[in-house]
Image (cartoon, rainbow, N blue to C red; front, side, top):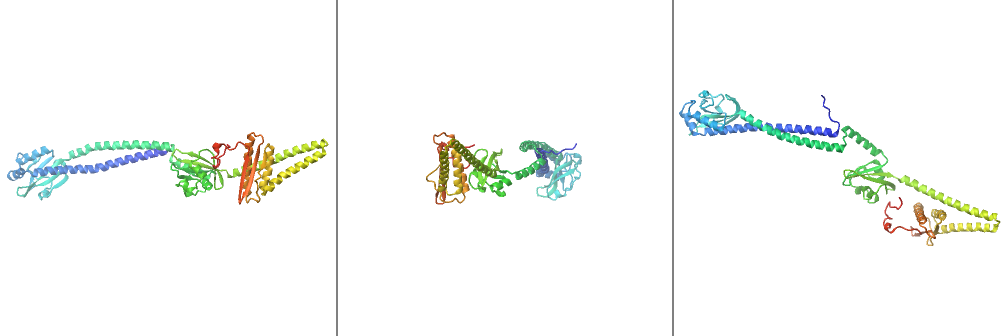
Amino acid sequence: MRIRWPRRVSGQVLAAQLSITAGVMVLATALFLAPLSSEIDNQAMHQALAIAQTTAADPDIARDLAATKPTPSGPVQRAAERIRRSTGALYIVVMDSHGVRWSHTTTARIGEHVSTDPREALSGREVLQIDVGTLGRSARAKVPLRARDGRIIGAVSVGIGYGSVRDQLLAAVPRLLLYAGAALAVGVLAAIAVSRRLRRRTHGVAFADISALLDEREAMLHGIREGVVAFDRQGRIRLVNDEAGRLLGIHPDATGRTLEESLPPGRTTDVLAGRVDGADLLTVSGGRVLVANRMPTKDGGAVTTLRDRTELELLGRELDSTRGLLDALRAQDHEHANRLHTLLGLLELGLHERAAQFVAELTNARRASAEQISERVHDPMLSALLVGKSAIVAERGVALRISPATLLPGRVVDPRDLVTVLGNLIDNALDAVAAHRSPTPFIEVELRAEGTTAVLRVSDTGPGVPPGMREQIFTEGWSTKR
């Protein structure tokens, strides 16, 4: 049966974590058991050494070794067996300087030569080793046996059964495996918890899908014609696509910086930072009109999208200008039609002198109004705007007055901005006056020069700005219109 590697990220992470955890536990157990076995051997050999030293230090054994013969019932055998039984040793062999046994657990071997070389112990050195003798494998120790005067008259060999050593090791293994199993279980539970959390965060996608999603994301973000700026929870820039860099003038290396480090203070920075609430917020950046929408993300950050409305605003202004011109032409057309109908009626009634007088009055009034404006406002674009607006205002039953303080003796360097502001103010005033019923509605325009500065004032008989909104009218992007 072929084992398939999971495709999901969470499954792969879980499998990897389980493999790593199991491998680490096996390795740790093996690394612990190896020195444990050696440590238990050392303990057994030093235990044998302590028994051997204690036996060799008994003066009666040294005296009896010199005074008696090696027999199964001799005093040396009895003393050695007593010590063996009390200490639990496998054997205690007392030998003379020729390697002949004076004690042994098997009494038939008393009087025989030992099976291992005793020369190292007889030469005065202590021996520790794991070796195989007549009683099997054991941890043994050999020490010299000295007489009262310090002469070496024999040696004592003590063995600890290797079965007991192995039993100690095997007794430690279950506890060790229990601890290892508990640690492995904790690791498995932690791996499962991490895997589930990762599955929720990655929505169960595979590594191949993540790579494809990242490629698609990069292509989409840098290919769309909308600006995208992403922020982390600390307000640092996390992502800027090509269009956002072009609209805001942000360099690609702005990633990781705060918004205040990349943009100057103003409405654009406030909108991007979320300090201005609302949808489809208008802002101006580098001469471009932008529409911004900010959407918070689950990790505490946010994503702001930007749409360039500069061309749309320019087209809208051109359309407004065209509509204004059409309204002016339509108003003049209505006015001329009414005058022609009046003139035709006078002629049909035979009132030729009255008809001639009516034409003269109209001509003089029109000329006087246009001349009054042109005498006070010398810039042709501004005077033409006022003449055209007067016809539109008159059609809606409102009078357009020119303030006596109006005097603009020279031409404006760039009158287009002033024409835009003046036209918008007159249109707004006309809307306010038309919505507010007044016995004598009028709009008054004052335009004068103070040095190199043009001062413009438009007043009307409308309701005016509500007191609660007077502090907001100078806020960039604020408007009472939807």
